[in-house]
Length: 147
Image 1 (cartoon, rainbow, N blue to C red):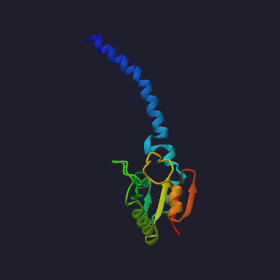
Image 2 (image 1 turned 135 degrees about the horizontal axis):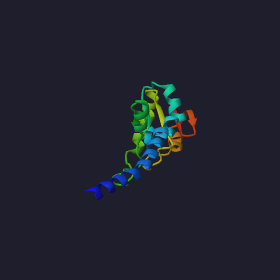
Image 3 (image 1 turned 180 degrees about the horizontal axis):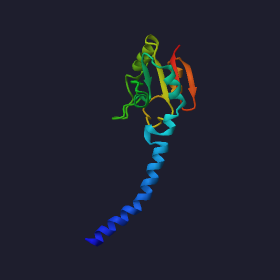
Image 4 (image 1 turned 90 degrees about the vertical axis):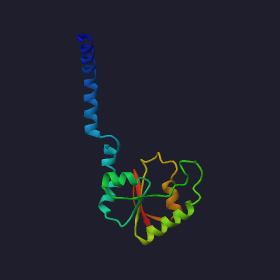
C-alpha cells in the first residue's frame, strides 16, 4: 500500500513540472485554432473588418465559423477523398461558385495555413479560372470577389 502510494506520488510530482510548462505555453500561445497564428491572422483580421458579407466561400469554412462566427461554404473539391477519383462535377460546381460570387456579391477567402486539404484547388488556380478580383492579399491568405 505505502509503496504503491509512494510510487504514485513520485510519478505525479515528476509530471507536474512538464504539465505546468505545457499549460503556460498553451495559455500564452494557444493550440489549434486558438493559437496565436490564427488569432493574429492578417487575412482574418482584414475579413472581420469587411463583414458582414452576403455569402462566404472558403477552403477553411471551419476556421471562419470557429474564429469569426461566420458560416461559409466549402469550395468545390477537385478529388473525392473517399475514392481518390476526380470530382466529375468540379467544373459545374466551380461555375456555380462563380455565379454565386457574382450574383450574391460574396467573398472567397483562401487561407494558406490550411494546407492539409490536398483535394481542393490552389488559390492561384481559382484566381485564374474564375477571374477573381483580389480585395486583400496577405502573407497567410487572400480575399477575393467576382470581377
